[in-house]
Length: 284
Image (cartoon, rainbow, N blue to C red):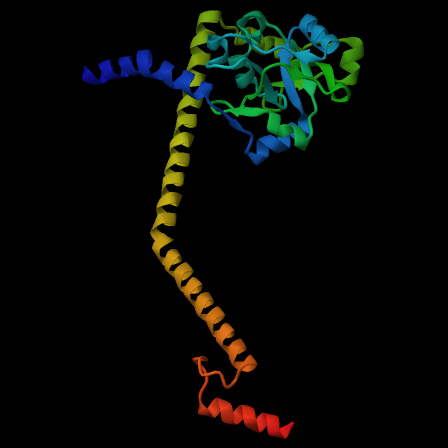
């Protein structure tokens, strides 16, 4: 009974907090695989066809406004690195565009091709690797276009998203009979899809939280190892400094001896030194 109560409390109080917390964290794009995807496949900002046309004519994408919509402070533009997988698109797109609810098989998106120098302007959301841009996103005029994305099936009959082919752009996209049948079989409702998407979010959130703790533990371990070797490193540094001072002092004394070999103030001056010097003078 206590375990069930704890599980219920977790689902009601803790899970939503974890989801929002991991959604609020945005970091620099450091994952090499994501960088490669962005540079090779571009960024996709899904929207309606009408909004896509307005974005192209204005030259920028307006950010989503509000703390709730952005899961934190700062208005942002949200994009996918490359064309997203089907489950990720369902989680992040409105229910009215969900193919399993209304049979929708076509989307529109703004596709941006950015270069490596521009990557630093974008962030990566920790929870699901969605790409964000803070504020109004100015578009690179020669590297942006409106694209049509369609739902299809791969060789294993799993849902995928892909861009329309040139032929489909000209003649229109007609879903296959197999796709229509599968969408009919898998037809869902808003409540069921909301639950599925939420469970998917929780899974992503706890995985992201695990990555946070791994990174934190790695940072602490690295700092501990550095502190552990610090006394030894400091000792080496002090020894090196002492040797350098002694070496400089010796060079100074030798220089003084050469210039004034019979000066009694020279600490290196002695009888042997004088004899050697006089002998060298005679030989010359």
